[in-house]
Amino acid sequence: MTTLTEHDVELAIAPLETLLSEDLGLAAAAVNDWLHGISGGFLDLQTLRNLGENTPIVANALAAVDVLADLIELVEHPGSDPLLWASLGINLIGVVPFP
Image (cartoon, rainbow, N blue to C red; front, side, top):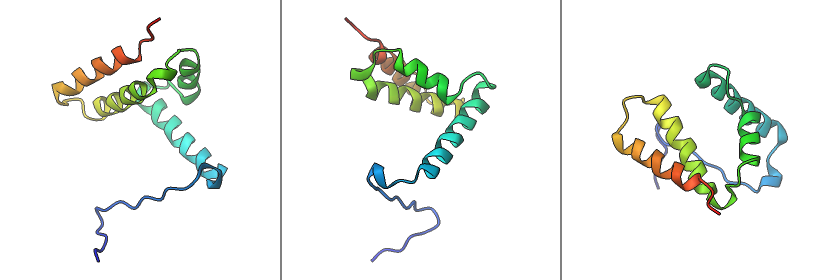
């Protein structure tokens, strides 16, 4: 049997209908505050939602999530690995809808 240390992370997975709306609202508010902070008040969760709804990326959702993850990494660690920039470029190409 292993014991958790202070560096271990505990994760709970639950069906979406069992999550409390208050918890989801707090999480959305935290993400919205973070977006405001890194963009100088220019970007918020609603703007991101509007962009997502008006861009036909349904088939490319994984690339869109990867783009966001790459952007977060680049903002939080400005001297990042050049391969992260390459990953961002590849994922941006993957987000572009093709007819």
